[in-house]
Amino acid sequence: MGDNPSRSVNATAGDLGVTNNGHAQGAGSGMSPSSFEPPLGGGGALPKKTRFSMETGFRGLSTAAGSMVLVIIVAIAVFLVSKAVPALQDNTANFLTEKTWFPNDTEPVFGIAALAFGTLLSSVIALIIAVPIALAIALFLSHYAPKRLATPLGFVIDLLAAVPSVVFGLWGRDVLQQPVREFSVWLNHYFGWLPIFGGEGPFGQSIMLGGLVLAIMVLPIVTSLSREVFQQTPGMNEEAALALGATRWEMIRTAVVPYGKPGVIAAVMLGLGRALGETIALALTLGITFNISFNLIQNGGNSIAANIANTFGEANSTGRGALIASGLVLFAITLVVNMTARAIIYRRREFRDSAA
Image 1 (cartoon, one colour):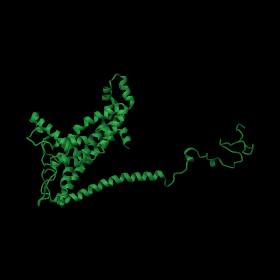
Image 2 (cartoon, one colour):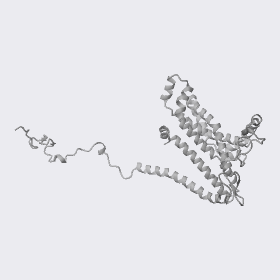
Image 3 (cartoon, one colour):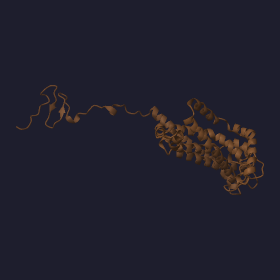
Image 4 (cartoon, helix red, strand yellow):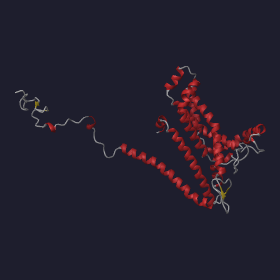
């Protein structure tokens, strides 16, 4: 008697029948409670992914293109090693420490020490000259110059990167060589007691001239990348510094420069990579000697790339193998420099996203 009577499904047409177990079912549906399923909706109503789509094809094409870069780098390394090993086996001196370069002799004697030293020294001088000027130009374009001036000036600086290196080399040899010679004589007269400015001449075609030409070639790269980094500084950081009473320079020093430091370092490293691999400009401006000296004003100096350009035409089979071996060293140095630059870029999320 105390139990609630259950109503049959057929008791009232169109009403829901209530059973003792508490489940409801539609009148006249003939469906059991276990067979009732809610209609699909939301994500369940979307069509299934097709086996092949444009997105899948594009992803595969992008992956293949990225993998191709690695394949090319490995192929270049394998080629250089295969061509360099026979010459290195014929070499009668230590390739890494020998300073002379006579691979065409009956008993080949050659080494990379002087060439690697000249390559690194000229590149470091180029960075010492170019980086402060590039950063000053980048800050001027991003935070000081009005837009009507910053835009065309930025285009002009970017166009410097499109000038062929042989033009820079000819310009350095025919235009800059005389002023550099006169300046070298002045440095030798007043500062000749310093080893880097010593010597008795001749002056002109020196590491200083080669480094100056490289600095002009590196300048647009460092300037463009640094300008882009400085322009990415969040406006809230700059406004907060100004709201606290900072001057524009103090705002740049405390908000802009710290934020852009990783990007600036990466820009400098990429500029170094460009300077390390430069060929014709240094071949036209250096004195081409095989010695290790920190003197910047006397005629002399050499680099790996310039030596390849100057001696490849007259080299025999062993000489060509020796040049390829030196190119392998330059390839390794440049690869390390660029990998270091990319690692610095990926240290922070914002630079990783902008580079992707």
